Amino acid sequence: MERTRFSLPLKTPLNTAAGGIAAREGFLVRVTVDGVSGLGEATPLPGWTESLDACEIALNAVRPAVESEKVDEAIAALSENPAARHGLSLAVADARAQATDQPLYRFLGGEMRVETIPVNATIGAGTVRETVEAAEQAVADGFRTLKLKVGADTVAADVERVAAVRAAVGEQIELRADANGAWDVPTAKRAIDGFEKATLSMLEQPLPATHLKEHARFRGGDVRIGLDESLTERTIAEILDAEAADVLVLKPMALGGVDVAREAAVAAREAGVDCIVTTTIDGAVARAAAVHLAASLQDVAACGLATASFLAADVAESDPVPVTDGTIAVPQGKGNVHPVLSGL
Image 1: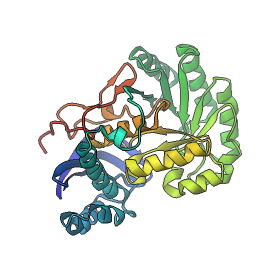
Image 2: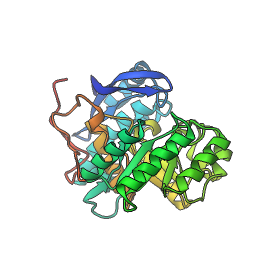
Image 3: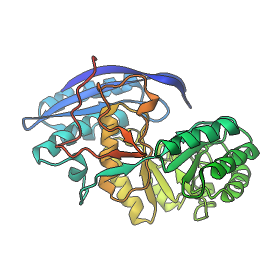
């Protein structure tokens, strides 16, 4: 097993529950399975996964098993380290998909050929004018789904911004919002009541991650409730049993791999809950794998995969899954992708 460390500076620092982050740091993981080389990526994000140091320690711990060709045992041993598990399991899946002459999404269980995945544009918090201008630019760039960040200002201000965007882009554009757990129940109710008038399709994580029963109070309305951060605090079974969400937002890196994320999606769909796929602002290898995951689900709604633009550098010399007119073309070669790597 080969492991290469990288650091990808962000264009703008990322604020998380664990503090500000100026770069995405992680490891490219390469393994050989039955003579075929596969490539994975482990890019931990504090607050969502284990730390970078813990990820490195975990990968080092399973090296003997991998080198003894006990790769499935090694993957199982990483269950408490989601980023490390993502990196190793992706490398193994990539190798096995190549060996069976399939693109990764077909290897994961996708039954039909999928050409493209629709993706959303993310509009940060700002003034009404700034938000409207960013939304109009995103629509001009071909995006048909926009996600607005809310929760950093008053509910009245957020409702005004969403309403202004709706007036500017028209009814044919899907609008979503993401509160990142900022509100309590009364505040969330006021926001949802206001957002209904702007025909908001989905509100992500209006309440703190552990508040499943409270989220369930809002489920099933005109504004669908999506859960994101809750998936790191509660199991998929707990969320589905609580009937806490209309939509699950699946981050493969945080869940421990594209295979784990797909199992979650299948369980959710069986329970009548929709799913979309997004990233933790990962490098190109993990980002491509997330595109394959979305493709394996067939007929998925717009996903949060247009995240390369947050990075000032990447693990690949060019983006293997670029966004064009609000969509990403699904790689159809064997395995995940094998980009020309940048100078790491």
